[in-house]
Length: 490
Ligand code: NAP
Image 1: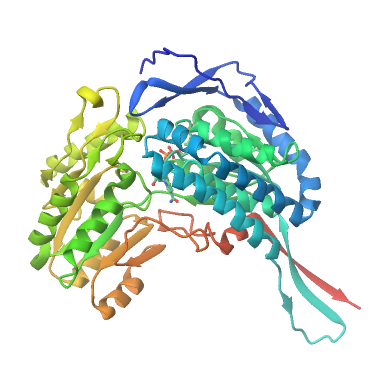
Image 2 (image 1 turned 90 degrees about the vertical axis):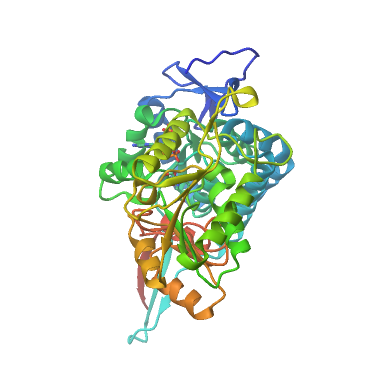
């Protein structure tokens, strides 16, 4: 893609060992607005392996002192950074919307949620304790202590570019680890803002390091360097598998990956609610949420009525750039995303599903310079169709008709992923059966497949996660600490 730079664009540096600095590569890349690719949001360092090694060495050197720093002092830094995010939320939201495409109100919510996450871990991290164990020796005390791991690599995607980073960096820092943070190359600016907030809040040099650049240039040392003790990654399953294969067996990994999330609509469901949940879960953020609804498994008796409501609600969604009032569907985040979504719309047609709404590439007028598609609804989808099996990560809904609850569960579970799932029903028994039968890390009843609380665990089953450590909530601290068992005889 050729980018024309028509206005002066700011250049942003890496942050290594307490200094904002250029990459040793002397190379740069642009972050562009997916609603208008002529709008360049910023120029960033196209770093190389030497930058990453310097960042890891700085983090390694800073670790012993940070591990000894009083938890209350670490917490004070997180709280101050949260205040900085809150004070600047309006500006950061505009920058995030320009860079990623989501509506500015969603972007503001994300910035504020990130501040809440910092505050949450500032509190929880100070009361994360070990246990004591009864034993038969009256002169011995046995207990566990939790210790930090060391240097943690944090690698994040573009779809929630500040809130996902915050939910990894905050628990890592509060438990005494040092961090090397590499953001998505599509959303480096909001990542700079998070690092700046922590810097201004007083994070000591070397404790938090920040390196931008393509995964192909900087990815390997982030996951293979012997000083890196843990890698926390959110992104595609393919990249997660690659990282998992490369990490030494002594390096702890946490992978939050793709999804193919079902919404089951029972014959007793409130169909208006079911259609609203589908639109909100499947099309908000332009379908680019890992927990987004991508399959609707609906009982035959109510399918027609449900689909009518779904079309009505979908046709009311305004498409446009994230700064326009009332816009519900922004652009896809980048050109690769656009191509992928259009490819899957073709796959749906080729495999014999019926495209009953949308699925067009908008490329004229106000949409000319952006990555816009209309939300797509397919019916007559069979469980083995590619649009019913593979993650699309865009505004495409596959409606699959079934006769029974058992058939719905079998189809819902017959995919490689297991991130999130929901059922729409008024039957308490069916709702409870569903929470047991479904293979998903998050299960909901009469709610969207999207959305999760800061204070509750989050993670997937099957290929949606490494399933070893959950993120979010109090358990989110576990990944960043190791347990030492202490026996004291006296
Ligand atoms: P991605 O292409 O996998 O990239 C994610 C991050 O990893 C980026 O910073 C990327 O850098 C880096 N990366 C890619 N390959 C790497 C490798 N081999 N080694 C080291 N780093 C590597 O994913 P994305 O397109 O940004 O995000 C969309 C995906 O994220 C979807 O599959 C979605 O389901 C998933 N996701 C999952 C969750 C969850 O919690 N389960 C949440 C959000 C998103 P570059 O940008 O430089 O390529």
